[in-house]
Every structure is written in structure tokens, then in C-alpha cells.
Image (cartoon, rainbow, N blue to C red; front, top):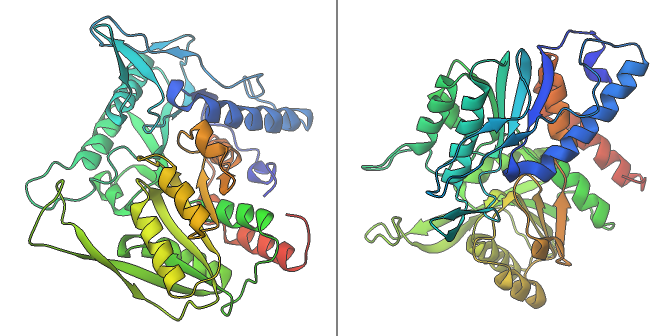
Length: 390
């Protein structure tokens, strides 16, 4: 999609665009800003002009200083009165630290979520609209209740709405969590197009048909993602389900006894395993090994969020053994320099996509085309089949 197609309507923006990208999301925020600045300069030259529409940067300076006790406050460095504000936040950025009574503390998702609320509180109702782009949804794994448990994700969503947030955009672990805020905008953005595009850029000899390729969901929860990808590629889908021991509880959950496979024969076929997150990576690597044991050919792991909570050693070992060929994750959350340097890693940049979403929402246009990228996926597949450059 060309950036200009969105706004042939010359629809007025909701308000002057402002992006607040606190520390947790600084790099992504800069990339998003660069796209918006270049698109809007081009439109300015074509005669689209509103007050404050074309600026050198849409980033609004903010600060989150801490007291010696570890407490903090949010500060905005310029006025946002009447602005249409987009706050980017990455709750998974553990690389950031702060001092607490002389000790160094790494920031947890809780700290980042509090910082988001501090920025909203600093806006103090002056902005025309507040939108939150939080790619990894805070507490999204605690999206439903089993037993006497807190429903943290629903609580957080309702709290943000009470603070005046209008739209919330991210790739939710389970999109049904939007039931917690039924009267507000909640967009689930997926990375299927970026996965396909970046994989085909790097792998020149894939055969995109049922005989040579399959999409795999590593568990029952991720099935809809895998079905979407498989249908777009025109190939079959297979799935693993986790057989658990419900008689015992380890670390708050029932341990997995085995991964059972449902699907067609995988022998000799390339596999795309797709999931929303790689946490420690144990499940993903186990699924890859089980597919290899069944005679699968190349294995590509695609995941929107690569957390790699136990480091990269296990992945290095599995790669050396030939268990998998590539890992694809996005830059929607913090990536370690170590991860970016791995020979098997493919980074899927989502900044242009986020910039398109912000640009479209700022003009109050529909983003449904952006949320369902079928056309763009098909274009890339056609180019690949015709040996054209992607």
C-alpha cells in the first residue's frame, strides 16, 4: 500500500499528531516518526496542508525521573493541548534500570505499565485523544481465570479506559480479552505479512504448495494464527496439543507430559511454526525436534514476540544440531544485541506498519485493510513465484 492512498479523502486529522515514546520504546518510536515525517512532507508538497500537519518530528519529549526511594513521576516537555496523542510502550524492555536505595533494579512489565500511566497522568486531560500502542499487551497471559486468580489483563485495560484512553492497539495473546472493554477501540495487529515477506527475502528456494510446505501451531491456543497463515499460503496446517498432568502443579501450572501431533504427514516438507510469543523457547524447540523426528525438512519458527527469557544457548545448540533453520521475530519488543547477531535470526521490522496505523487513525479513517493484509501477502507470493525482487 502506498502511503498516500490512505488519505485521498483529504479528511481532516482528529488533532495535531503527537507521539510519546518513553524510554522503553525509543528506537521503534524514532523509526515510526521518520516514516511519518517523510510521508507528510510529501503530502505537504502535494498541497495537503493543515496547521501543524507537516513537522520535523512528531515525537514529544517526556521524562520519568525517580526519587531515591524508587518512586517516580511523569513529565511532558511541551504542550499537548488539543493533540491526537499516540503513546508507544514496550513492557518487555528489561534492559532499562533505575536506582532504588542505592541498588540497581531492572525494569519489569509492572514498572513500564506504571510509567505509561504516569505519562497519561501528565497529559492531564489536555489532549484531544489518547491512543496506546502497546505491542506486547501487559499481563496478556493472565487473560482468563482458572480458580482463585486475579484477572490482571482485564483490570489493566479497564484502568487505561478510565484514564481516558480511546484506542488500544496490539497483538493480544487472546483477542477475546477485548470483552473487558466492549465500548472502546481495541485492534489486534498481526505480523503474518512481515513474516512471509522476510522469510521469502532470505529463503530463495521454497516451494509454496501443499506438497512442500506446511504451517504448524505449537499448541491449541495459536490455532487461528496458523490457520490464517496456512490459508493465505494455500497449504495444510498441523497442530500439537499439550498433554498435561492435571494431578500435580509445578510453578502454578500443570506440567506438560507430551506434545501430541494432529495433521497430515510432514515427511520431506518445510515447516513454518507460528506462535505469538517465544518465552523460554522450550515448547518451540521441542515441537521443532518432534517434527524433525517425523522427517520434516527445513524448519522456520515465527513469533511476534521473542522474549528468550532463558537466553540463547539452547537455540544455538539446537541450530548446531540442525533442529531448526531460522527464527523470525519482530522489533515490537526489546531485542538484545546478541539476538540480532545470530546467523539464524531474521528481524521483522514493524515500524512502517505502526506508522501506517497511526497515520490512518489520526485521519479517523478505517484501518481494517491494515489489520487484514491479504492483498499484500498475495502480492509478495506472486512476486516470489515469478522470481521478482521482494
